[in-house]
Image (cartoon, rainbow, N blue to C red; front, side):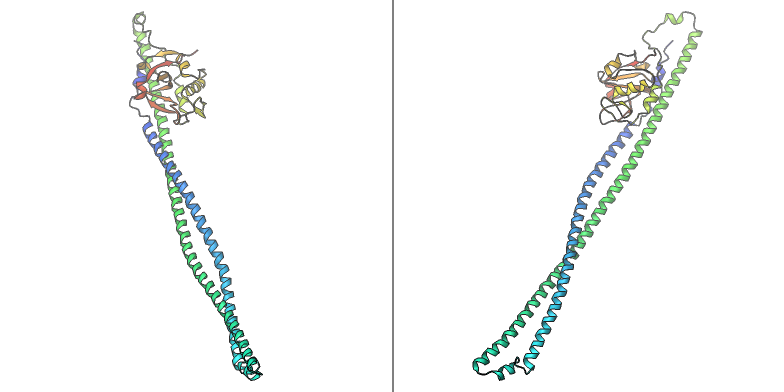
Length: 359
């Protein structure tokens, strides 16, 4: 009996494709990447605050330098004024020349002259005191400003240190998240490699079991009475697939992103992946799911073999059967070429399958 093709659909029925794990890791990677983006924005703000703080600190440093010069000048002027005043007082009260109070009194020619001389001496003394007071006030102002600048410098230095620490904390968090993202990407690559290996093994096992069934059927035909096969024809069984090798070709592009209208290793849509993989086998197919449905011959689901085209969603989607109830396809925007199980949504929207025949 020619019921040999059923074996391919039965082999490795429980083989996991790794899709759930890969999907979970991709979601985790997206979450980590979003966290990195948020930290990057926070780091940029922290850098701005740090730069503003350090700029203000440099301004304070310059003001301190200028003020120190002013303070040194004020101190020198104060000492000079104090020294001049002391010298003036000594001269006024101890010398015997006409500039002293005694000289003024003794040198006066009359009362009016005496009053004028005393007023002149007092005027000179008042000027000396005024200069001294002005210098003292200036020194006090400069000293007060110096103390304020020192306090501001201390506070600003603390702020700069605080903002530098915040910046460093954010950078450390980003470094940690980037290492985590790199680790997750490595795990995804391992999971995808394992999925490819499992799918290839599944396809090879299905093909091997099919070949064994072929040989057993041929032997049964040889051992049956002449004409037995003709008396039990099964016109619904499609000829065996000649393009199981197309599965290995399609596997090379696992992880390639979905691109609408894409038909190259830089990006595929569903029918583009089918067209490109079959082209490597020397078979030209149209780049349109509905047109691909009209190529080859129909295949019952329980007769599927690696390389058969499987259609879903009212001919809105197509993939290549790999064996074990799994198929390889380019799902949709935002996804990548991957292997999926013909269960769930795919089982609910399954339309049928076509087998490509040789020329």
